[in-house]
Image 1 (cartoon, rainbow, N blue to C red):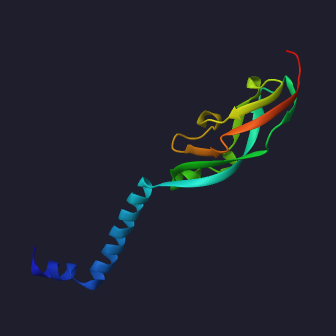
Image 2 (tube, one colour):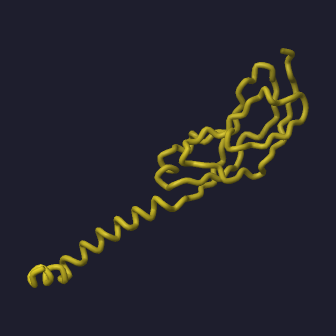
Image 3 (cartoon, rainbow, N blue to C red):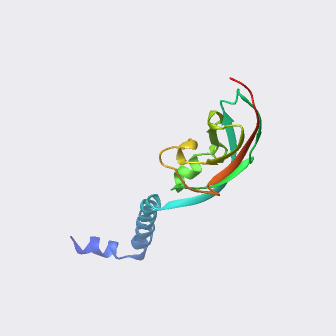
Length: 129
């Protein structure tokens, strides 16, 4: 390397912008490796409810999710919903524990916890099949 190039590289006007650019790229690479956690109150929805007329269940459930920041931002909060098959319920009191399969999430987002993990759901009227 010639002496003129070394002098240009050592100047403040070259080092400052290049260090900012390198710092930005390092931050963006490390940011994708870090997983964020969000706690969301999600609505509880039932499907296959042809035989059930009255269900006493909570309206929302508090759930913690983890994922990369960009994935959590891209997946709209309104898409976080618990969908539970009502055919699994019987007349009277049911204790239902929600699993990650009850959430339809992209593969980059996962459920950490649901507090409480199990809920009591009461079916008051079950129509004959």
